[in-house]
Image (cartoon, rainbow, N blue to C red):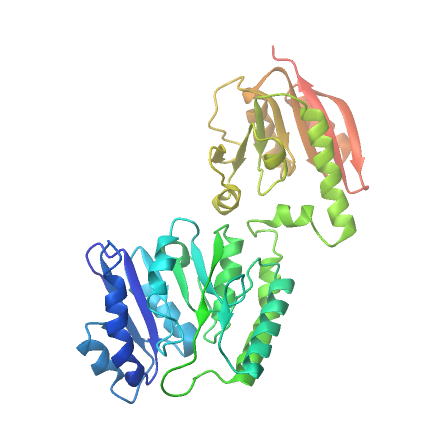
Length: 397
């Protein structure tokens, strides 16, 4: 790893034969960094240049890292792995990304883990040939729709990354599709992504290394695999997306469960939502505490003042008799897990407290599981024939 003492911001330029541009660009970057009141450094990730890119970079004070792997994706992975800085800002070396904009992105660093300089949001603009603009606009629209990513410029490489976040993403693509891969994996891990408008400028020297047809084909080849990842139940926002799904049966099932929970909770103030994930009940019952073993799902649901706990349902870090209502909307797990979960639920629930369980377990089996811990069912509702929403109470001895 390339280390530097307390570097707050590292500006990263993936380069291949960009000496002519670097001679003009690096002094501008150095000037821009003087306006940032934190330690900064500039890195050139060289992809095997045959001109004097390396010598030019070193002459202007940039540190040079030899790229591992191929393509743009190889350059980014090398930077994410090797550069030890709190934030990494990636930008092109061809003057299409104005250096002064580095400060704009850095000022937003606390707002999200990934901040994109965007050509396609309000006040953004791109100076490019109409054929390139058309392909770029079309690809971004398709990816945004198919992958359900609320970003308009998925292909912009001018970005600020919180390194602690992107270093965990385990990137695979070596093509420019790595830009979409980063966003999909960031969403799946519950990280925030935002866009800042900027004006994209024409390349100053040389010709672009991206070929339009190959560029588009690489994106489309990646689309299906990224779609599978985006729709995995392990994605941080899986439950939120199900609540708004375009599949009417899926949407109806989640909303029926939501309404049943809301009606049962009523005005109770001490509510625990176990294995909450990205459940909409956390938004609808703001007084509730959310508990989930998956940190990335809690990360997605973070809000100021919201109470979220990263723990297992069978080992809740709460005192006895804490809650008036406990919600188990994701079921009880395996029969072996159910005993431990219900034992903890009974311990944390106040006398005559209400337990809400949504499960696909057979009703007789569920009744036996609840009876073992002293619960008795007071109401049961079947939801679209796929699951049962049960209300139960337990009187403690």
